Length: 544
Image 1 (cartoon, rainbow, N blue to C red):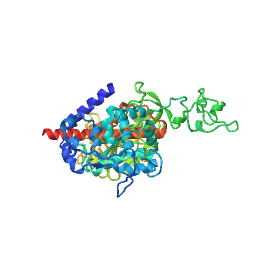
Image 2: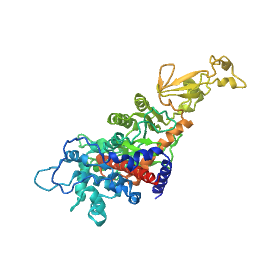
Image 3: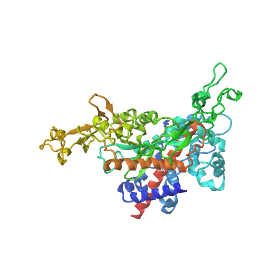
Image 4: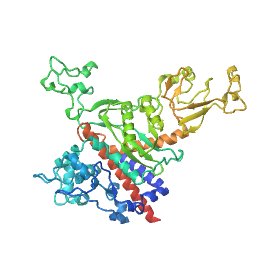
């Protein structure tokens, strides 16, 4: 209840802030997008002629006329509005291929796969299991949803919807949000450039990333379970026990029940793994208030914030076992995002310190984007001699040769390098050191003094590179906070909505099931955001 209240308050605040943004009405009001309707959801199968076959249901785009009734519009949910904006019939041929529906073969007549696809979204919108959803659709309160999904005399059973959901496969699931973002781009609803006031207009869009942990549907039986625990064992080739190797009770795996897999595994969640989330604070110390044990999975949403409209769009969400290191996840996920959505220029990546490693930072620079990534600290940062020797402090701010802090003098967005100057601060000291007096940069004709340019790494005189603390926006400055805080909030908002949908614990079994649950939930969040924007813009347009 507290989480829901916080989400409602956040959305109400965002609505108030959006009211004065001209772009909201100019792009999202019904009057503005009417000529583009319906928005056709992208499909990988392009057919010149519509696919027709005998089916127990048939989805057709319901039209947008109902949205012109402002009294009704004001009471609609964002999802309901979105279903009157987007035509999903474009997916029919692709869904037939994915689920291997026999169109002309004798036997049971199938349901239209587009109808079943919408049921998968409706499941999360209503927060219902398959059985309760089947009952809702068939009952007296399901009439509106039956009409939108294309059901007539008969509605699907729980097993029919569940089987369809599984048959779609993870490749389709993880591509749902990229397709939605491609749709926004094609219709001009996604800005081409960063809308943040403090960013030059030629920079691309920001992307915020932050992992979220989810408990598996299965209950943990052993925290040390790993791949070898699922391998067959025999007296000749005994299975190792990671738990016993760690000094815990573990399992000897001599029982017949352990022949194919250790009895303490969770076969229906074979990819689930254990992690102790430390909930570290800014100083790198464990925060007991946020620390918890998780046996399950990690989703890794990549979110595009729209600062001007105070909203966001989830672009891509891979799902991994909970103990997967973000240094492994990010490079592949970022590369996939770039290749999948080449029409979008990414100008900035915002994240916590989990990706503050060269293997993650360098791909960001290679993409000509700015890494607004939290500082990853090290015990050596506290030693003054170490800081002076390497030439920068624990916040990544350069120091002059004598150890005085330098001042940020702007960012060259074309070359992606930050400029720092000493401004001859040693000249203002009442008791200057001899080394200060003889400093070659104390030239009255050049008041900026020493100048240093920092790109993706601090380069030591010995030639070694140090990416850990090099940042283009000065860490901790007002400029940094303007870019970091609001973008981090959107990932927290997404994670909060996922938690509100009940997905802090996955509803389905296995990694593929977790991927399906989370990707459909993310698509639902995108659809709700779109519906809310059109709803608000249309009502504001009518008032003026």
